[in-house]
Image 1: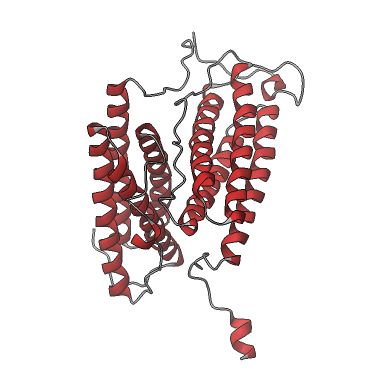
Image 2: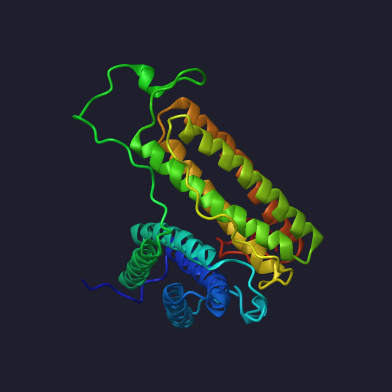
Length: 334
């Protein structure tokens, strides 16, 4: 397949490449700290694969931006990470955090491939997607080996294929409900797991943040994650299904921050954005009215939290603006 690589970047391609660069500069800071602190040899192998891959992507993106005369985003750098800081999180947290990152990466690359027009851009995201899949396999293999991999709930196999015969399948806002479908269970498991990783991250970040406003923002986020986990767990337990329990405590008593407040705010707002996407997908995949309504309420709450985070970043001069279309009205006035 041959395509003209002199073709200009589309807005969708600019978006995927710009986002990839900024997120990878943040991810590299995080993984460098994980690599410096991880003790388990098998976990270290997985994390170092992530470090090497991310460095490779950033080199490719820098070369591409220079060829296209595209301004290289500022992103994050070694100034935003202190690899000499004491351990803030457990080894198991490192791996589950990386697992969450790769799930987000696979979703982003699938979208970028679908929207990409130029063959070289599609090929770049295809490589990232393949590497993310490989990293997921490595993570699951090492978690299984250690006996700490948490599987989604098991249920009995169906006896036969069936069709819905009445509207009771859609459920009610209150009262007795039909059993959860496997699709609904899957989303409940994933959103619970994501909230657990977010809660532990927020707890650690609140413990070491320098700015009082940033610290209070993280504390509020931890309370939101705790509340939302309880709501989602209750949906599973009402069907006698287990909710995911990943570990007892992932955060140490360190008060020294491994990351700048700017980087921690970016990571948390990125987690919030990912949570919004997962809630939206879960809501659309849950025919039961009571479950969909719960997702809707949680989505509004996390959306407002993400907006407040963006306001803090703007106030402190930390919010890097993505490329945007020309403001023709302003140009005319000038």
